[in-house]
Image (cartoon, rainbow, N blue to C red):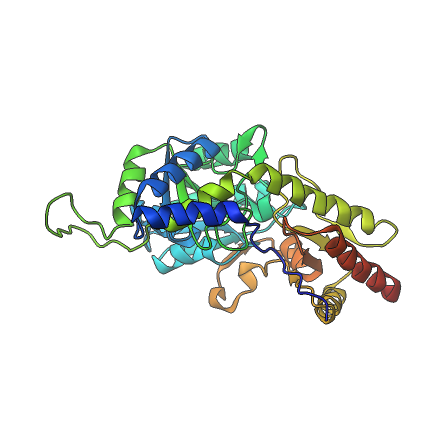
Length: 370
């Protein structure tokens, strides 16, 4: 059988091993250390933020931000419905009522529907949290989102977990809102195997989430606690891996763009479509659109017979059983993208041979689907 082609594997080599070995030899193994400090400085620079706090995951990053904001049952959390569950799970656990908003054709949130949701939320007299999502590495219009949040007095947080390295109007992902988050999970554009970060210009927020991530220990000799915290800090070893990954971001972005362009060209002459391009996207995953869910599932099965990993687009949150009964604005666009969308292998290490194998499956399916 041919070797397995994974959806989005890490792109690593000797540079990462060398950085981790240096960190290991330094004796800084546990959370905190010089590599964490250096990684945070690099992330602040990348996002054009004043502060970065490296933590164990993007999910943890969101939990810390929302804990700082004191989100509870008195809040409404407005969230795009087309996203990974981590975007909304922290708000839900803390007691906020989730309201879901549909996508536009790009996959990102529909601004008109967002304004409708914000307008309705204001009428309730409750506090409002809006969490944007830079879906599949495609940045939102940050200026428009910020304008709406100011108009309706909503706290604006941006989930840029999938968008490290992406830009919009010369602004990098991670630069929007009161705070943003990155993910460095093993399948992301750059990885620390597991990890995330909080990006912000708010010193009070940065200091508090860093304290919260270390069990909220007070700055005294003994273990003194005035609030409940978490064990969410990133380790020095993982930060070393992240530093090596950041050094090759340009190569990774170029490779992922090449993958998308190859797929689009290989699908010429078929009825298959792709999400419309957005300037500055990082091409984390290339999304191809088929006729319906039956075709999507059939193609995924065909890929699997060839030992190639693919996956459907995110299932919208308003269709998840855990959120039954939650308010939703629209929903048909995200449902359509879910039913038709397939995430193609998008690793930066894909070879020409790999890409041709994938294209051959697409061509074979296109012929059979006629």
